Image 1 (spheres, rainbow, N blue to C red):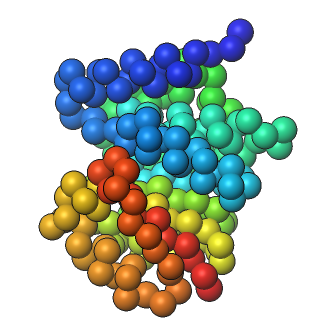
Image 2: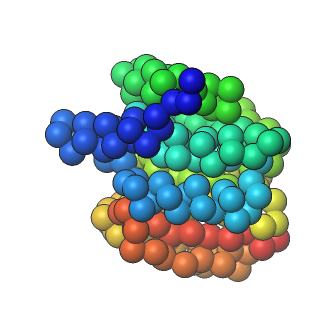
Length: 188
């Protein structure tokens, strides 16, 4: 039986609007992440900040569409959000694609190995620079790092933006989608 992922995404979006506490990337942001995965031919994706699993569903569905499906590793610290994300991933039938790592993001990043094709950062805005510093060893030339909330939380994310823009190994573009997505391509 095919899971109704679009229906689940709409349900999660309505829940977020109704109850708050989970500000998802929205349909445009989710579609962009899925589109980037397809354009990159990404096989391994990392998400910092799972929340209720909304963006994870978009990315995992894109990874699962290929015959040689990829893998999404997503990090979350809050137990209630972890439980909700597990339930949503299961409802979507994507548990074979998604691994939820529980715990503080920086420590979880330090424990990861391998290279990721795309990294999506959408967690504690004040820690974005810390996440970027840990992610650098997990990306390769051509990998993308996408950070959300650059426009909606400018004060908290400015140190991240400054660091990425000062780093000559990244080419970046700011897109006015979701909370403002800074898409950075790692060159070297």
